[in-house]
Image 1 (tube, rainbow, N blue to C red):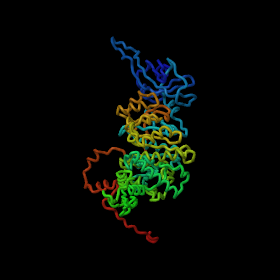
Image 2 (cartoon, rainbow, N blue to C red; image 1 turned 180 degrees about the vertical axis):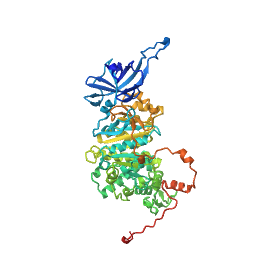
Image 3 (cartoon, rainbow, N blue to C red; image 1 turned 60 degrees about the horizontal axis):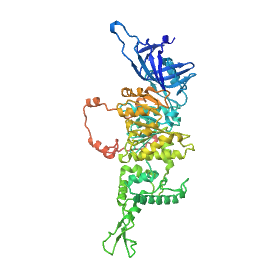
Length: 609
């Protein structure tokens, strides 16, 4: 009966765990099969097979095909037993028409193996439950939508991996648009996505459904501010004061503790007992006052018999970062004398002053309404910062970090993630917390800050999110073109892998090692995937699948396409103003102008309309 079934492929010859060897039938003389008016490729790597076991059917993915020996044609006779075989990795089962991952039983030797038809595929991928998000179509059957479990995609973490030009940015833009549309109405979507955009690619792609914050804001974007006083003291001092010995670190942290205590005494904060205040508590304090008080102590000279009278000539000014001026010390007995209690941190304080004067770091050290005055008072608190990032009406927040100096980029990413994660962690019992309203954090160019030997604040907090975020409603999506440079611990925590074209052997090896399914043979297809085509495997996918990702609308593509060299070079050059190039370079803005445009606006009276 099986031999006359058009879907019959062969019979099982051996079973080893989830790997099944199949002996192909002699009747399969062609690589094509016509079933119910549809053409199917037979025995193709990545295709699906079905093994019926009574009321239950097992499903698997073809990972390898081969033949024991070639047919012999000597003497005109043909050896009909070609010894053709294929290996299948079992992935799930269907009981009563409902598909589930995992296996409750294994097949036996000589059980029949059948080709999976469109009807079978619809039973697997046709589920339209609320947690299923359509992201594209099957490469082998483009009329069948591929759906991923939104719950598993967010809470069990995911990774989008692919070489440059494989369609990675377009895939991420399409995925996020599908996620926020899962409820059917973007305006009423309760999704909460935070996207760290290192190259400024996604403003054009997701601007209609996202609020954009940028260190160098363009029209329609909001300025990005990260208050320095919300960072842990060690991270902040490492940036503003450089490497510190234990004694120097104690001198600075003691002063920070003192300034935070004074700020808290002046303006008590809900939830913070002064007795529980630590140097890492997110309490505002003035870096300018910190600098002035310490530089005054370090440069002070003293007179008098007890050497206790400051020889001050001109007092310093914290607002303008002007240091105080003391009479220079003398070598004789008359003085003035050096301050013997100085901590020897003048070099570190000079670096702190330099950082405060460097306008490139204003988003961190002069954070707009979150910048404290000399008493530690701010116009706005962290609640408005978090509300701006996570509590607005749009489902996606894009933090455009393309204008951030590389010297502070990794530290800034770590600080943003720590602020967000700690806030959601400690508010997990509240309606704004991560459990009742989960957050998906999308990390572009993840290999730049979560390498195996990074040891930085960003890598530490990403590891924490990967290990613990699931319990507190914080999911991670890593996006990278170099999987080999991502920490193995972090990548292994990604329950769903979306692998686009990868040509580097080291990258492919890392992806194979991180696969939640035993599909090494399927991963050998990575170098030959088409642009925008991906192999999806893991918690969110019903079956490991080769999928064509749906393209976003043509006017909502990321700014990551290649320049059209042939078209550009065929166009005759017009007059080029390189003064505009220099103006943009100096302004660190793509829209800077050489000559400001003056527009005179006049009010229109009712009669002139």
